Length: 253
Image (cartoon, rainbow, N blue to C red; front, side, top):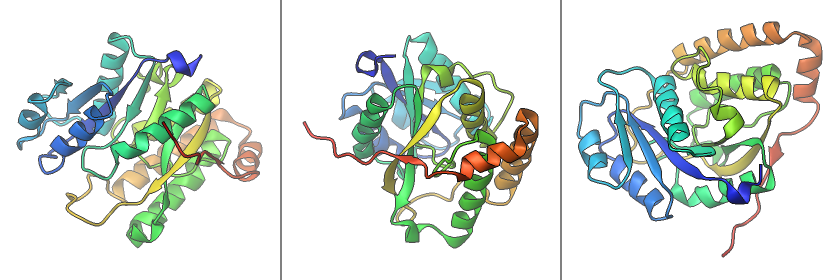
């Protein structure tokens, strides 16, 4: 796929993000990018704030989890004819200013998933979250049979081959792990990382991600996928044989 001709949009799943969602969406719109927002059953002012902006807003009547919100957004992006989707969270931890570098990486590495990897200012991460992310990176890299940096980041570029995995039977935060594993093992995609800052200080709401509950779910799913794809030892060796691909070129113009 020639990425210079790719039609892409930004997808923002959200739940009770009234404190940040308006600024997050507007910052993306300021870049000229089309936006799809999926509200996962918020009971605050989130849908009202988003509804006043020139975006596509889809709403779940009840909370269905981040996986289902992403699935809804993928389907809408495909319905609108987009070739790729760039996801980001609605709580302000992901910056629109990182989007041009992620898009540049996607152009440099077509048919790759691009992850905005929190490799900068890592001391900002709470120790418990850092340990949980390290465990997830180790296991998911094994399941992918290639090294992947920051498998828990929600700021990602998904090309069409990954979007076509929309019906994977995985829910909540497991869905993001499932996409990585299936895309690499079944669709032959590779993963490239763009360094972004770790942002945990400031006026962020408490994360919906539970380091114990969600890492446990991801771990059991990942173990199952390692076994399912076979070549367990060889997959582990490939995941440890090299460093993750990192794209860190400046974007000008």
